[in-house]
Amino acid sequence: MNEQNLIEIEQKSYSEMMQDGFTEILLGLILLVFPVLIVRPEFVSIFVVIYIFFMPHLLEAIRKKHVYPRIGYVKLKEEEPPKLSIGIIAVVLLIFVSVIVILYSLSIGIIDRYFIWRWLPTVFGFITWGPSLYLKEKTGQNKYYLLGTSMTISGVVVSLAGSIPAEFAMTVYMVSWGLFFLVLGLIRLLVFIRKYPVIDTPGVDSVEL
Amino acid sequence: MSYDDMEIDKLIHEPARLKIMAQLYVVEEADFIFLMRQTGLTWGNLSSHMSKLESAEYIEVRKEFLDKKPHTILKLTSKGRDAFRRYRGALNQVFKDLP
Image (cartoon, rainbow over all chains, first blue to last red; front, top):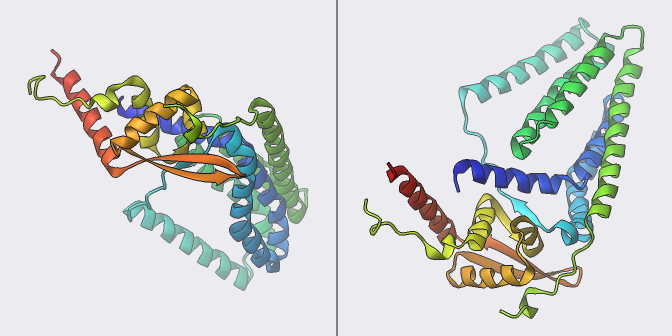
């Protein structure tokens, strides 16, 4: 029972909880709502209330009813917060400076909101490398590289398509990926329900020891 | 170190219990169904090993109801976590000492 065996057991446990399709459904819903938030930022508060406060409870309630009776329940270890390193400080500083530069450029008219909409798919594509690498590390499955790669490439392509209006291009990018993940999630959920019937448990106390 | 000095925890050394301990070591907690599926043990087998590990205070067992059905959650105690760590250390030592 070496370190590698334990990592594999942990990755398998994580993968088990990923097969119900809910991660894809949630990602799909977020991407579908995103264009609305960009164009109408006043909806951000509603989004935060629904997605941050209600969604986790709703998701847990659904999992309790439909997932745990089929494959069981596991609570994975909580992540330790990363130690403050020069790398983390550099990344935070870079984000901070980028936001200041963008806001300043917007205020003096060097760039406009159309410029932001134009390049948002590219930025979003690169951002998805975060969850992509995280899921690869957690599950050990290389297929998660595909998420970052395909969303980055399509993001760059959409951003460079100058003939399409920026707002439309950004909306098409988000909605297309949103629908893709929503459908993928629903298919995975259906396959999951078919593959794993509810296990009838006798109750631990009833077992003769 | 001689083999006599080495302490291999026999409670953990049993293959089925080793599977349970290893599974619980890498997660926060898990329920009966999850452990059954991951370890390949039957309900009765898992239940019997669970009782032995619980008696040794290596795991704690929490019983609750989920959708009106009994739901049993298992978690490694700090004593169990230490015992598993020591067990791994002892086994590693055995292999390290081999010529």
